[in-house]
Amino acid sequence: MIRFLYAAIPFLLLLSACAPVEKPEPAKTYLLRGTIVSRLPERNFVTINHDAIPDLMEAMKMSYEVRGQKVTELPADGSRISATLHITGDGYWLTGVTPLR
Image 1 (cartoon, rainbow, N blue to C red):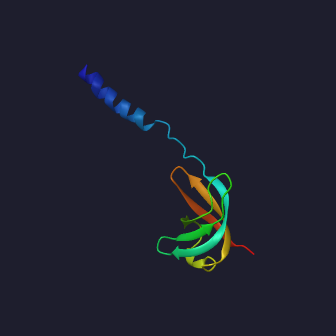
Image 2 (cartoon, rainbow, N blue to C red):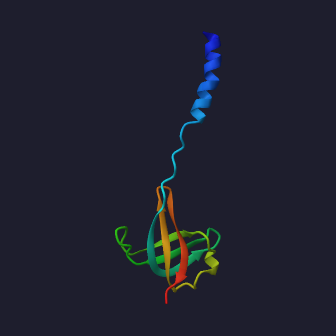
């Protein structure tokens, strides 16, 4: 019986390590338009006073992490911009921040 337990424990540990890993849910994306209010370069965050986002939220001022760009290289504070808002169960961030003309 003891031999069986010694043999079974490594097998059970190996089996538990092979359990399927859940894939993270894909990000939902939304078009965001608004005005840059301020930025926090050390965290690469930007605060935007954005328009309402249909089916998601009313117009409001929020801070967002920016991915793929440095906030120091974005249009100046007070500029109107558009961006893609990404939302997952773990958080939210912006990509593709561009000036509106």
